[in-house]
Length: 383
Image 1 (cartoon, rainbow, N blue to C red):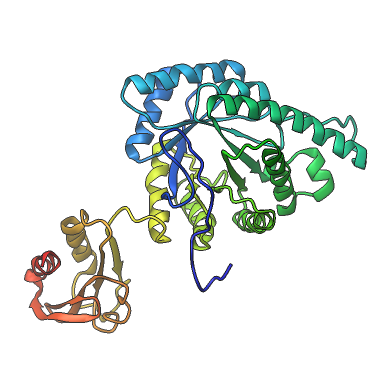
Image 2: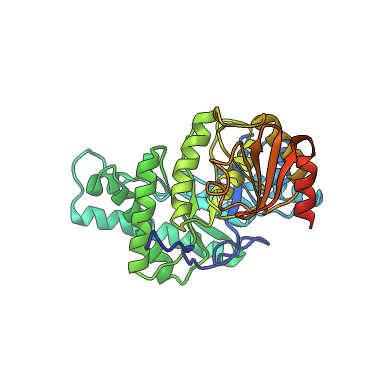
């Protein structure tokens, strides 16, 4: 990857219901319900809140067969209320639940670290024969699951979590990014053997540095073996409030800046719908997906020639509907044309009570009285 010549990683397209992922499609945003999957109405209401906040996929846990069966009722309830957003089942430990869920939802996430039980009865190292025997058991159950997905046009996410690598992978590779990558690549090779390509991949950790390194390593390994599956990005257990938002922005944003990522989920210890605006803000900040007006403003200092905070608020109220436009608000000429070079339009302090307006780097209106400047900016943009 040439870090000085950005381009989005080219991934294959996976059809997830009516919302394809990968290729040239936008980076998709998703969230996950936290109500009991047996509480049909509560899940429907949460799904609707996520969808109306902008979520393009909704994930629900299905820890057992009962929960997997109830996904049918949740899906029907949503469709009856006019919502066609694809649903994703999240499965751990229970291949049988994954096989049931695959009949009712558009995508199923499985965790290779706990998809089948370990054959080891003690803590000794795996022999080569034991390592292969457990791999074949995993292959058998995984292929059976893939065949059901083929019948129902269900996509699959291979979701590797740092905290739940299989004992077999831990024994051979340790608690490392390499172990995560090997756990994923093992299943990708099976998918190729079975001609199943409706695959999405995630490698997640609560440690942002480890997560970033693991995904970068995976991309290199996939390229080497001519795999181009789309990637789901996320920092697990990111937390809540400022901590969760910063960790998610660092982990997800770093990879998006590399051109990596086809869908993201910001995992916050908050109501699920609150994850959606954070996800879109990360996409906007990395210029991956523009969904709102962008504002560039200086932090202000003793040179600032007007009340910066009040002015920004006023300009936002007047221009927030102008999706894709970049507007700079600068307190003085020092932080004016040079620092706002990326903006489409600029509002710059020119003197006490005076403002100059810019189109790009060019000053087009000088020394306007401050009380007239916002209206003049709007007229300039409209022109």
